[in-house]
Length: 290
Figure 1 (cartoon, rainbow, N blue to C red):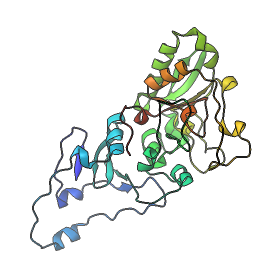
Figure 2 (spheres, rainbow, N blue to C red; figure 1 turned 30 degrees about the vertical axis):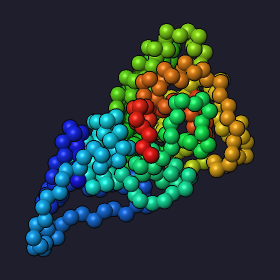
Figure 3 (cartoon, one colour; figure 1 turned 135 degrees about the vertical axis):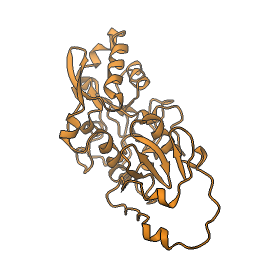
């Protein structure tokens, strides 16, 4: 089954399957699907079955449809459980593995990214709801760069309230940050929250073996003086423990960032209120995939 961005389904013959690029899995421990070989096509002498109907939008996972919508420069379609990338490669959407909360953070496939709810209707996150903290590393490295050097090639300078910050131009993230700055300039009462403490920084998440969102140049930390972080407020707690919430960032500031495709770390159960990350897949208005 095939669905492409244009909305038209295309029947795929055995020979056309041979032209598909290599399969990539988001999680390093996921087995790579076996490619169709010419020998297997020739050996199949059984009568040809009637052609199956092309995939419809209803047959494509909601998360895959969202990725096609918000990352059109990279995600071109969906076929047989994989998203089709613009460079001809494919990537498994769901590795079919049952995962714990921590595994969904450390070993995420594309489906796992949509396992949590980004709830804009409440200012206190639901228990264990960390939408955006789960990132399929293969997917983000495909878009933004698989190394520090590759990411740096796409960094541009953005003027940010007296500072010059580096941000990626990929997926128009830098343009989105500029739009945030232009709107925030209309609210002088918010200026004290806006000093940046960092954007691009190629590194692992503190205490984990997964890449930080800052590695991709599409994240900005601001207002450290007014920020709250779950471990600061809950010293000694583990990620699976119950914690208390705290926030001093104003609602207006958060809403402006969200209007331009940035999620806020203050909406995470494991909150990080200085953190704003360009993740438009959670801000489409129909990102609930359950």
